[in-house]
Length: 587
Image (cartoon, rainbow, N blue to C red; front, side, top):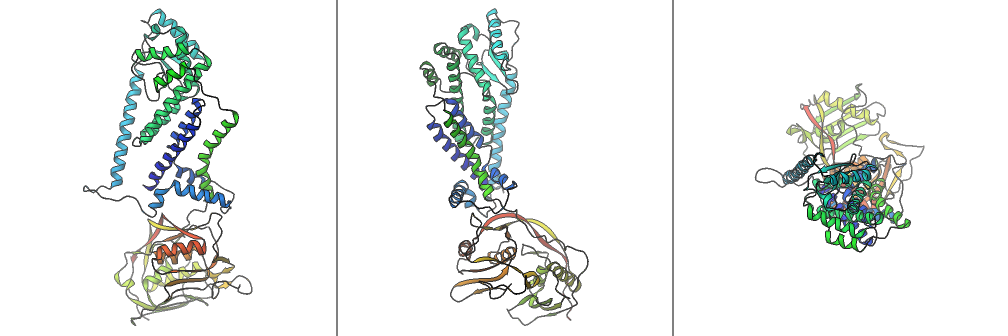
């Protein structure tokens, strides 16, 4: 829901900006203001989020280009102002307030919106079909009517417009876009002079030249989708007003007969009471009194000089370029959730030797991990801890796990030949579980709330306490002949976390991937963390924060010390489902 509310807010701001621009153009031609209002209308059909997301998908030259600090601050401000509801509801999955009938509030809103849209579309379909039946045969018309139709046909033919005699209840109007049709009401010819008829036809042909019907249909779509927004209907009135005034200005510029044109409009208003359709361009729309006064005064707005036309075009293009620029600025690799469903190879890999014994000490201390020389040691650990190493998943959850899995403790010692790769270690643990626990399981994809670990700075610079190191920690040896000198870590590839008595939590790493760091943060925050930084390799860092109010303090420390941030999101993650497991036999 936050995205939908953001779109409404952005479109409302856009209309407000259009209103200011239209006011600045109040002394210029109506067509310029019409273009401004039309742009504001079309904005409702093009969500900001879609343009931003689309820009992120474009193949930009690099995912780590820098922008000037001033531009970065501008993008930050624009993004914050443009997406207030997403920011407020960050991490939430929507509105879930339940009604007595068990329906969610979101469902009720969607049903109400859909009902309103269906009613409007049905109404316009009925009116459109009714218009098709307004055509009348030409056999019984007067000689004057035939003369007028021939006169109109000659003028409209060069615009590709067909003239049709219509019911007298309609006003003259053009319908259609690809094959426009001019509906000329029967009987009106006897009330207008030839000069007045020419002025009315010139008005309708101005609609055709500017494709006003296509624009009107676009706004009808906006009204159908956003019928609940009062500003949409106000915007429609502004479009009709400036559209008719623009055609009035075109008639005065071409015909120059103010008196005849004004009288023609008044006589049509006396004779006809209905406009065909919202997306049919007539002649009597808008504020009639104001239009007649403008026509009689010859009030034709000033034409935009070339520089101002360019400026107006730049403003309109910039309104589209802003979200595209935001998307390009935030262009980064898609979330890459590490594959966890199967080993790379199917060849079994087993430990040279392995033993397991129950641990009934009742101690709270535990130790688990790989040590140099291919030794895997677990002291006072649960079977769930071994499973998490054999079948990694961002979700700290085992579906179908028996109660003893996280309650009973074991001591495990296993030795591998040589220096196994991370994939080989994973397969060794899988083979160990299958042999000693008769374990089998499969992965199931589920959408979960996650945190995205991202770079906080727009220029993608790292924080003062985070730096890359040239170490291959997965292989337990540095790249090169001598270990590099580390700034923060006590030793290469080390990691320690202390919660001292001074009320401060400290994390120090001598080499850790961003994905592994995300797993550490996930343990603290109780939600999976997915690496979206685009940083590859290993990094050393030093991070400290107060241990009270962990979320707020940790988020601030990440941004200020490491140049990282956490953003709420949703992503499909693999969850491990246990098919079978047994207690192991002790050695």
